[in-house]
Image (cartoon, rainbow, N blue to C red; front, side, top):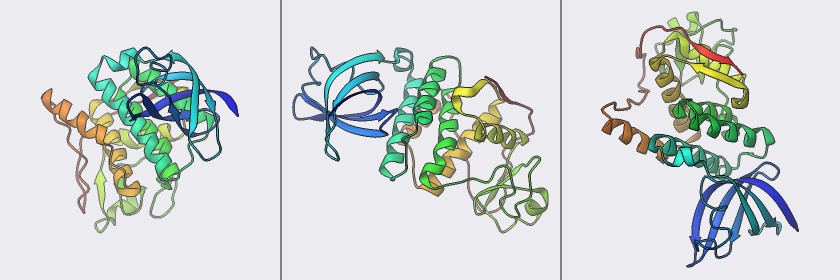
Length: 280
């Protein structure tokens, strides 16, 4: 059966001397693995359309649970702006890696909304949006696909509705109210700036495609991103290799990335700031 699908190429592996094995995120059929014959050859018509981080319209011959075959391809976007900026390239690679991990874990990535959000996120990365924050937004939206649900709107310990919070408990899996935070000495938790809870609550209720201009303090953005990276690692068992590359790059720039420490007890990670997400 032949079908034309809009795809995002997540991963490319050489197959023999001339062929490619490609992992594709599609709008209609979740993640598809296919073989592109002779696509390793630069003069081949599939060479550009099947490169990693390419949005393409591909014609696939589907064969049930077997590998599909790419028969035709048209490159729609090769994200040149991401490829020529090392920082953006690393974080866009982390997005691809994140999606592959979801698929390998057995989580569903078949929603059309997800495909549109990933494309919207890549578009924001090549504009003036923080690529690190875009990745964090995707991490938060994909945590349920790993079977992880963070408690953000309600206290993770007593279930009370939160109006604000500066305490996140890794043992309880979410933010704590003031009363529970006082009794949280035995919990593995961290003290955050007030803006972190506010931003994450907005993120949890908005798709990336509907998020407007992001106005965050540096401390808030760092804590949001570090917190979600630790949650992905501790709850889903996923450590993105691309983020280690990003940490090395930032270290070379003289701004080493400090990972969020998850030691028992509390840790003060910064002062209070006011910020949030703009309207789309």
